[in-house]
Image (cartoon, chains in turn red, orange):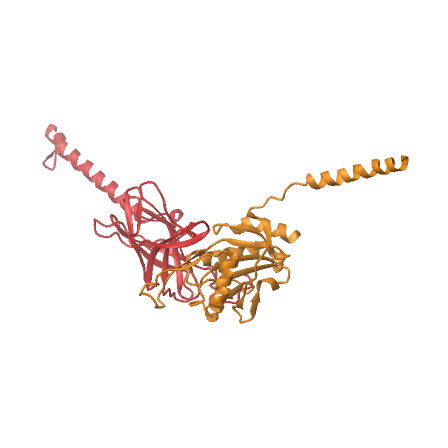
Length: 207
Length: 202
């Protein structure tokens, strides 16, 4: 009897205990990873990864003539650097910042991107930082475009940006580029990439 | 003598009362920066996006919100026009007494065709004014507008993209053609709305 209590399949009680603890730990990790990749709908606006970097409120202003501007906010638990932004919907995407001096508006190019400081939001918004788009073309009826934000540390993060037609949705407007109101976009997921890169999640953006 | 005193004793309080009531009128609170002294808005003469001649002085007694920009601008200018759209929507019926005027500082790229493809898309009631170079020079002088052309990406003389540093101020002109208020370019439609309504009421 004693022999049975101290061994199990030839392993000692201590060894079995450690094995069980290890299994529990693995299970917990697996569950938390699974939970992270299935973000609940309440956080639809976010693209996130294990370093806590979140991209929110991604939106694209489309203008007649093939120009546009991208806006979003980035927050990260770990310091990082936004290197560049890419989208298949435009031939060029460049980061700029509008600065105002004594009422004069200037556009300053930022080819080296922007720092993301821990705990501080990096905000791209009209009248401030923005990604200028050239040769912007979207499929008729599209409600969003896919962006890839490249960060120095966590790598590529994919985000869906809601399309907003600044012209063409005004009352009394006769522009043919009017887009029907969004009925709420789809929510796509990508599998987790190889280790070393940030988790890639495609998210819808809030306005 | 008695009648003079009596007349005086009636007239004086009336005069004093009127003076006091005028002096004690609460000052109109303006969100925008008040232009002092009030000046007549200088003329802007060019061509509207629809090909018709444009004269700032001939807008038929409307309150005018005037801004300068260019169609290649990806951020500030389109957002300005978007805010003007919001402003007109908020004004409702009163919008018909308000003129939104957008003047291009980039006549080289902003042809009438380009203005016609850009401005009415926001709202066909907007004026999108193209000035010939000499007309723009006059306006820059009269209005003290800055418009500085950046270096084209592909070198001088090319049409490749360049920015134009420009005055982003919103100028508000009353129904008598007087320049009354200025707003910074980050002003919201809701900042302008009460001031516009106050000018409409005057």
